[in-house]
Each structure stands twice: as C-alpha cells, then as structure tokens.
Amino acid sequence: MTYSQWFGSHAKKHKTIVDKLVSKNYTKEQIIEYFDFDNMVKNEKSFCLLYEENKKCHDIKKLNCYLCACPHFRFSDEGLREEGEMTIYSECSIGLGSEFTHQASVHHDCTSCVVPHKNAYVKKGFDLDWKKIMKECAL
Image (cartoon, rainbow, N blue to C red; front, side, top):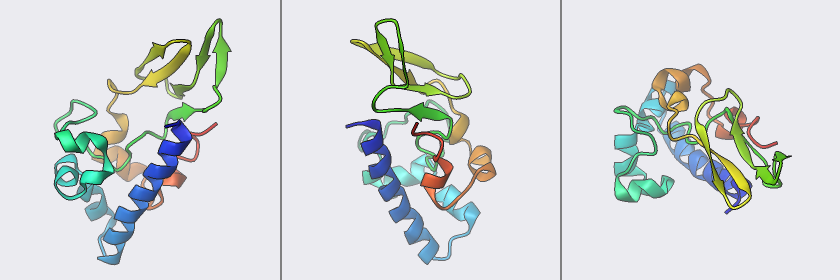
C-alpha cells in the first residue's frame, strides 16, 4: 500500500467516525476524548491494524489517536529526493523521529515521537476534517 492509498483510506475511516459523533452532537472536547486509544480499541477496532493486538504505535500512557499520522509528516510516493543511491520517500518537517532504510528506500520512523498524540496538540490544530489538518503531508 502506498502512502497516498493509506492516507485516502484512513481519511474515509476518520470521517465516518467523526460524522457519527457529530450526528450525536458531540462537542469538540468529546470528539477528541473519544479518540483516546483505550476507547478506540474497544469501540473502533477497524480504525487501526494495531488495535487487534491492543498495541500502541507510541509508548505513552495517554495516547490520542485523532491525528493518526502527523501534520508534520511529509511524503511522496514517487520520492521526495535522491541522496546518493537512496530515494527518500518520507520525512518529518520539524526534524523529529528517525529513519529506516529498506533496499534503496528511506522512510521516516515516527515511533519515538509523541507530538500529535497529546490532547493539547490535537485541540490546538483541531478540525473535523482530518484531510484539512493533513493537507501539507502529500508533496
């Protein structure tokens, strides 16, 4: 699955959940709280592959899944640039996290970063439309 395919698929799943919550008159704060990892594992199993294993993508006590993927993540399915023999496919616009290589491909590894998974961060850039929040990601 390409980055673009994942983003499109995830945006649809996110919208389905948000639309359901809006139809129940949830407030911004209630919507953000609904996306708490413990609640999502229980109520939205199909949202994330890791939920089947009750496994978090980041090792933090209170993980918010509203911004699964990060507004600072940048990607191009064709590659962002070439560096020597390697093609860079993704990176962090604020320089956090690390990278991993596979064959001649370099990809960003966000597992050591928790920036988008804190409630305060989600509240700061909140929008009901996940794609608007993530608009800078696809290059």
